[in-house]
Image (cartoon, rainbow over all chains, first blue to last red; front, top):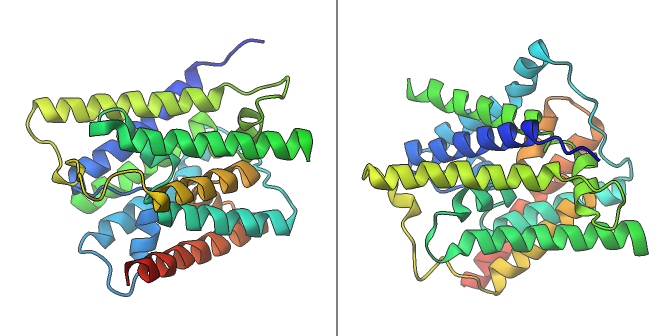
Length: 138
Length: 139
């Protein structure tokens, strides 16, 4: 099997660079889930508008991408029960742990005590366990 | 100018998700299913690249002495406790089931498929539920 290295590495670099610069420029240590939560609050933090603009940028990015490359059809499971359960779990987990996987990884390598990296690896571990059990055993 | 920069950073972030295909739940499913003979290595590669690039960026900012205050280690609050562990487990299970994280759900919203909209609504519900649980624990 040939491993495609280029696109994952370039894509990851863009994600790390954009989130890292956003955190540094706005002095906000948040992932996308926490930004969404903050934007929806009745009394959001002072920088809520910057977070909203970042989210809007993510929303329009497929339009820009599709002018250069055709967009692949993305297929989420059609089982509404799995969509609902996983949606609640992702939202709940993001709020309780204070960030998602990309936030954990982007802060992970440089931060004291590697707290964020351990959180990120724990998320990955449980995603692997769930998927592997779900597909191969259950 | 600041507003424009934040939108551009959001666009770059979204392009990163699209270029790496991290926003594709089927790819996440293949990467997370380690017993699959067609195991997908691109997702771990993306995560390593995210960590390396932003890690390098923060190291540079530290050397230039423009390190953001928000990233200074908070000894009292930033440690693995039962709340963080429970959150990471919920998030991992949810991600493993659907292949969506908050960022990929936002990006896929623009494709306007009913599955993504349903996921987004219930993810928002999960965020609110998490806040209620956090506030109850504090009181």
